[in-house]
Length: 300
Image (cartoon, rainbow, N blue to C red; front, side, top):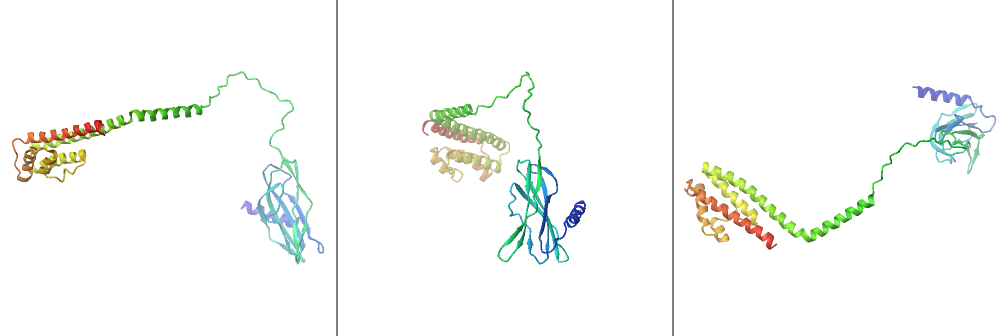
């Protein structure tokens, strides 16, 4: 609401402060809304013109060369016509970026002819520069201060780069010398870790089978054994029959151990030597593990 009232007062002021042109003259007046401004401060420049109503007159737009000033915005007010005379006015909001103590500035209005135009200039308006920094005195006054000031030491990035480079070279050399052996140890460690997991599951399944020798317990124990050997060797133990497994391992006696476990699954009968059969299967899997670890160290 206050903004509307201010703009209305400005329009009334602009209209009342310019005498209408006499005859066929184009009268132009321009002035700043303040006498001085800081560097870069927004300042309003008022441009008013009265001219015969049948004369085409236009005001500059943002493409006008504002010299040391920077164009920011423009406010246009409605034309007022009286006795064949027209009054136009506008406020140009600009900023001064010159270090000169006083700036002289003016803007024209253009009377449009058939193939040309006439520029009508007002009297130059002046704007003084308001300095916000005090002038430096001719003689500087120094304040004595002998207290210790701790200055933080800058981090030495060149030394860091050199240290990291040396460390990388050492790691590469160590890998070339010891990398193969470390890789073998890592592979053997993984196999032993899988074995520990298998033993933990095997003991749980074996305990359940001894306490309750049922079809599910026997099938779970046999499936656990085949699954471990398949992961250990990469061969399809889960798809092979007992006979195929015995032929591949060259252990014909393993068929008897399989039969004792399968007797529970297919006939729901428990052999007296079921514990011995399960131990034999476990010993075979442990032997295959040792063979693979030996192959890792001596043949890979």
